[in-house]
Image 1 (cartoon, rainbow, N blue to C red):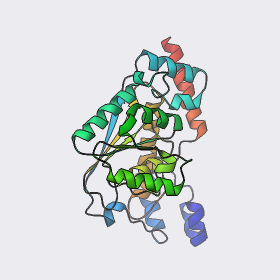
Image 2: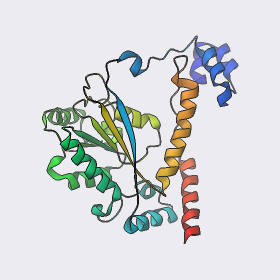
Image 3: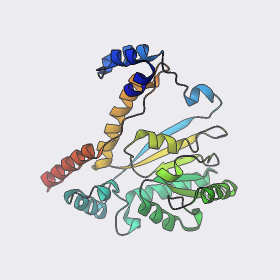
Length: 272
């Protein structure tokens, strides 16, 4: 952000260099106000219904724990992030069980559901598990034209219908206001990716309150990732969320996630 400000006003960029402590956030916002203006969604779309976010903490069963601990101890980052979804039989997944309950609740309440995951294999398993209730999934292999055709069909589908999508492909550029339930299968490294995905349903034209469910497993990387994302959100709110300033929330990088995996391996080994 300082690099961008330097293009507009080099003297302002020089003045805010080194302001990295939360205590300096008010001064930071005040100084950059001359070159920055942010309008948030709630400032513009005052008619939007409520956005209600929930964390669904799932307890791993022995099969899930075994798969997760093997992934952590072998240093398999991808499998570790896919905690609960990487069991041989998806019916053993506590996240899948809770997902099915949420889909049933949505159908009973006359709602449609969007499910997002970073991982294509997770989307494939969800689609197979839900069967006819699930639309053709959206992934990077699906053309933009076909994505819109899937969304159009989803708009016409009955309550209880589910649209599963890779979060990189379905999380931007689509308007899916016919859904009012959003399920996130795992924490993302960038908070902005989750926010953009939620915004597919929570946007102009939405008539119902939007329910967001984050599926998380206790005693896993989900806990640590969620904690880190909270810390980054605090920084974002302090420096950028008010009208004086804006800043893209920080991303969890591979080195940070590597440290999380090491901590998890130490914890599992200590337990054993």
